Image 1: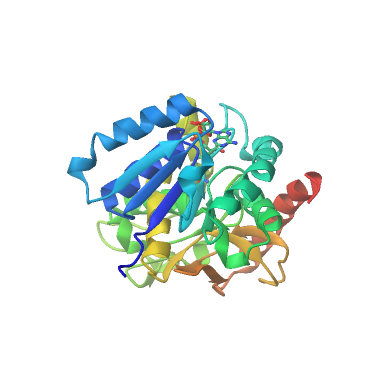
Image 2: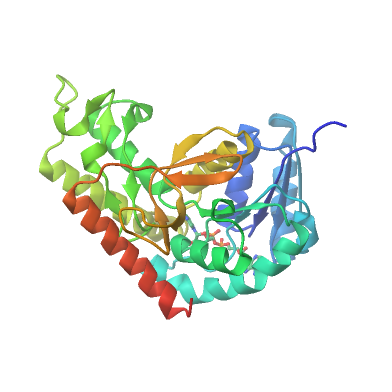
Length: 316
Ligand code: NAD
């Protein structure tokens, strides 16, 4: 019997969910994509529009409905449903409303897609990942969040721009919360095998302390800037999520800073946050033992405390 074609289900057909579907179609990530949203008019319109472009992308089918049945037997379910930041709101401001959605959704979702790996995108993503892990009772590797994959790509873009290099040659991560307490891992960042701290190349400059401060500030405020201008962030998160889905469905063993439940990671436990992690067909593996200097370790612990504080305030 031929292998069952891979299926992605996306919960929430808003700006983020619809753009993830679009990015997955363009990249040929899965043979079958399903969109689910409580707003039937919205999901049906998004599906119609996406289906009208099927001729121009790798072979795939796409369906959508306001009925969870459309997600049946999905291999991976991406969760984007819920409230989004309004201008001036932090991601943590969404915690209570989006936790309520997860409490209702996750058991019903697992009834139709019991073998799925769950990829959380809804904010505050670290909090929502932890809560989904607890509600679902699934193994830790099958529940993880997009975490700081997006923030790290913003970080790399800004470093590459300053140094006038291809973004693909910059290896640098943002770790911790996908939010205001996140931290840049400068000490292990490198470019073309040269530690970023040592980088000084004619016509490609070097990063001063001021450059670093500006770059990280820009990463932290990027979402606020985009939301102020157009009401939502969608393209970069769409591409980042498609890349994470590829790592799972194509069993890539790709290193990505996804948000997972940590146990004794540099003495941090019982919280979801992002550090570089190997992602493959089983989901998110163990976080990598990235070397951290004292400031980075303190920053990561502070970020863990911030996320844990919100989790506890929600009664988990
Ligand atoms: P949006 O308002 O455009 O879309 C949200 C959609 O969820 C709506 O269509 C709504 O009908 C639907 N929805 C609400 N409750 C639902 C339920 N119970 N079941 C099914 N669908 C439901 O918002 P958006 O811009 O697409 O953002 C979605 C989420 O993604 C937000 O929480 C946002 O903060 C988050 N986000 C995360 C990242 C990241 O890097 N993790 C990046 C961007 C946005």
